[in-house]
Length: 131
Image (cartoon, rainbow, N blue to C red; front, top):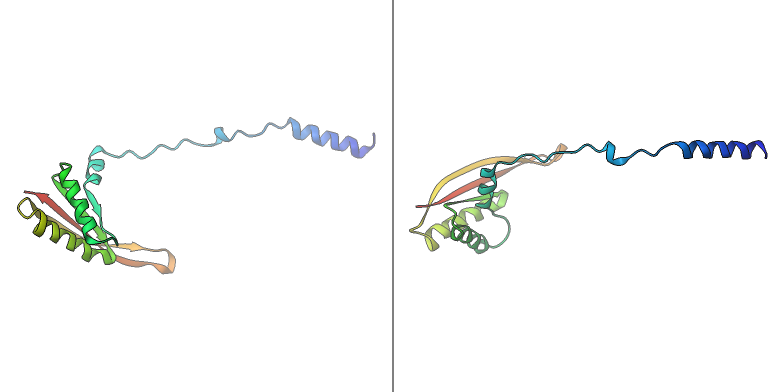
């Protein structure tokens, strides 16, 4: 055998002898963050208002109240804030006028974007509660 053939055999043997790293041993287990039971029940009573027609959100609020909830939170931001106000007014004045009252209104600002595209969005949370 020539020197080149012997060298290639040696390098092949060296590469075969090295054990491959196990991917499972290197991955660290990540635990999911603990969420309280109270937060999960509150999230069921939240209706996020967006670009759909107003009556879709009115129906969603009515459904949450019919499922036994005592309060519903309407959340919206940006241009959807006026639609959230409309949803609250329709529910209070037209559908559940004697059963539901306006409990609380919270307004705020969210910062959206990264780098030079940072902008502020207005937010609103309207809480409706059964009397």
